[in-house]
Image (cartoon, rainbow, N blue to C red; front, side, top):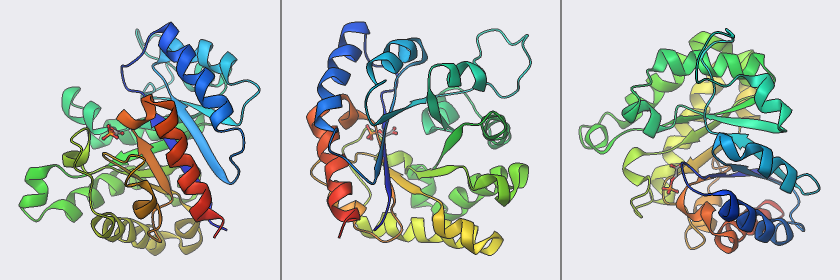
Length: 255
Ligand code: PGA
């Protein structure tokens, strides 16, 4: 039995009525799911609403960002205890949109991962190469450097509570997913890197694929031996489609 994690990254989408409608549809659609950790990551302002709507469900909650230190004087930022008050279990860190649009560096991302782990949250660490890096033959080097920066900061022992999401930047929001073979190859490299540090932690670390995953291509991607789930953007905003991805993971996991 393989265990999967499927997380929906809502990004800056939604409104109170939309978030309510989406979760009211999703809760019954996912109520039969077992052995797949289904997670939604709404914008922070909707966390109180979403945590109430998900209270009696099997869907977990995650945030999309966290502060890089726990100083109280840090205007505009949100700490792990605040997220945990609203039942957040996960937090996405290092998404490529934040790396590029907000200039988040490997160093800052490593600090955020440390803050999340210290605060009892499970970081979903996003790593991935751009199209230019891929074309220049620098995909693997880029991804490994992003991973190494975090491991240098937190160490492999603490990393056992983290999740990795390999998200090739060229596949995000483009409709152009990596092929299952391309994704598997990178996931295997990521696991191998972790295995050098600790084989047991490497074997249990969940490595998600993200980048235009949808109901049509999920099964093929999730069948790959080193893919343990998905980080879903656009398709997570449609209850039926997100549910189909979670159900595909459950079918594959129970084979
Ligand atoms: P996408 O986004 O599924 O819309 O490509 C994935 C992500 O950005 O996490």
